[in-house]
Image 1 (cartoon, rainbow, N blue to C red):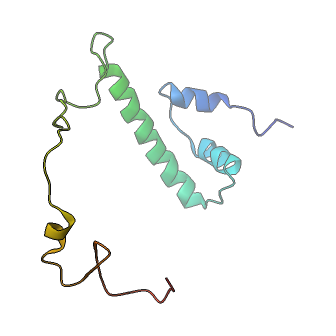
Image 2 (cartoon, rainbow, N blue to C red):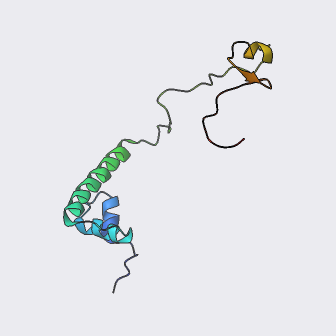
Image 3 (spheres, helix red, strand yellow):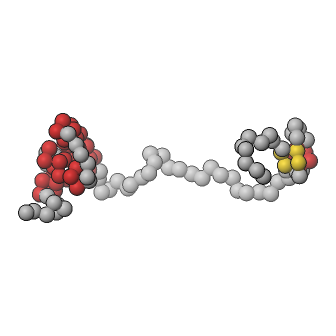
Length: 115
């Protein structure tokens, strides 16, 4: 009896551009402990085949002389240097607040938790 956890030749063929079969999907579903209906097996085999074909096309385009990038355009740091500048005093910041307590904004309680 073959080991159900062993890699199959058809999975290797699929990774190298071969077609994904309904049996491949059934095997993967069994390993993943997924219960799939027959129509789902056929549908997923088609979808996985399309995905593998798309990846193969992308790999054909990728050239070794093109450096990998994470963005189409070069990114530059848009942050300014930290500089100490004068700010509002607590009294100025709280001057327009409807209520304050201990140099903090006082807001109505919205939860029934005790403080």
